[in-house]
Amino acid sequence: MRLTWLGWAGVELEADDATVVVDPLEDARAVFAPLGERAAGMPLPQVVAPSAGRAVAGLVTHLHRDHADAKALAAALAPGAAVLEPPADDGGALEELALAQADHELEAAGLDRRRVATWESVTADPFTLTALPAADGLGDPQVAWLVDADGVRVLHLGDTMFHGYWWRMALRHGPFDVVLVPVNGAVVAFGHRRPASPLPAALDPAQAAIAARSLGARLAIPIHAEGYHIDGIYQPVPDAAERFATAAAESGVPVRVLGAGETIEIIATQSSQDAE
Image (cartoon, rainbow, N blue to C red; front, side):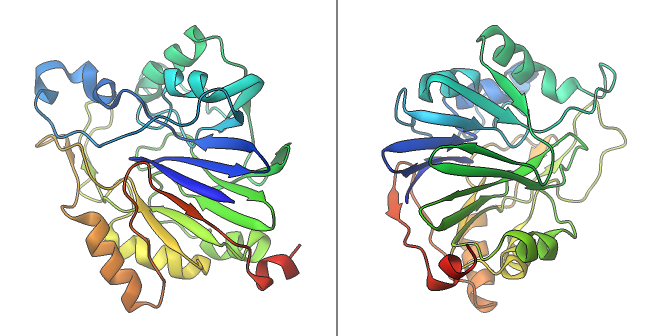
């Protein structure tokens, strides 16, 4: 399997001349556009586009705009391919406020959207796609996506916070050849979630290293790391990818820090093949 990191949380995976994309992002500036002038001048992550028109599925970990870019998904998908996303909680307008922008854009794009329950698997040849547990720092529906093909298992954790499902995930679906781990540990203070929490809404570097070790990751790749900072609203840990790499190495987890657009080949381990 070939893995191309698209920047921020996006990844493209290729096997047998087909691809899937997870959380691709084209317009990084649109993510905080609703904040207007308060978001002016913020640092933006570097992102690149996935291959056009090849993806047999587009996977969305959750409907925050930085993980659910309708234009990026529409450009990547092959004809007839669907967008797979987590189940909805069907709360009121204030509860769903952080999802409204992406939800509206996905509907306007006319994409085929399918909700997948946690622990459920869907096949889009040659891939088996499984929604695994994740916990969103704002309480919004989120899943992690396991992509399985060619005897290789790649797990994308979205921007989950720390939770207690790591061991169940490893027992049911491991071993994982690659785990893409969010690391920026952003502390957020949005108006629809008050009082704000001082705790990180996504894994910070130390927590991410613990999660990667608990999952038994053969290789961990930091994502959701560089870019976005708005004082008093969205405050990530600086140098998060490097801090994660240090913490993970100390716990015995190999790490690869990728640049946007960088591709690596993943070869199935014997343990992965034995688990088939």
